Length: 229
Image (cartoon, rainbow, N blue to C red; front, side, top):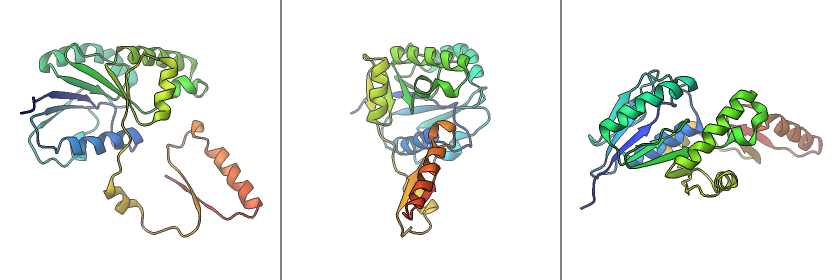
């Protein structure tokens, strides 16, 4: 018989806005929460979003806990989190504490996992204020040292982190595919060749360069579509 585990997840960064990190979180835990075993999950939500509505659960193995954190307030999560997590983790004593947000609060009980989608503050500091870039760099490097395991979405990000923290314990878990999204968004097949780009519209995503490249292709007589998701 497998030993049961208590797993706590700091999901206070997610809200009703779509993002790659949120879709990954929902996709993975939709499957994990519906596996019949003795594990019990504590999912901590922000005060401005009921995360429970994102899941369809088969078993009574999950407790959703609403916090006083606003999903968009970094400084609130930082200052209030120092006191909140100390008391909360002491109360439930989880075997695993996974967090999707910084600064990292290391659990004194069991192991602490940190899931990272990118290290934009280290790679692209010019896109942020100098204070935010320096502060984010400090707390990220600190988190890499304190985490028992770093979970990333690709080998590329793993190698980028290894450059800054060669001793970090990193595990690559790729983003899952949600088949219901395929039915929801893909209405018809595109017959012609196309370029697909996925990501939030920000300067660092290089959409302007993509448009300039498309203009050059059109000038050369190459017909191609661009799909931005």
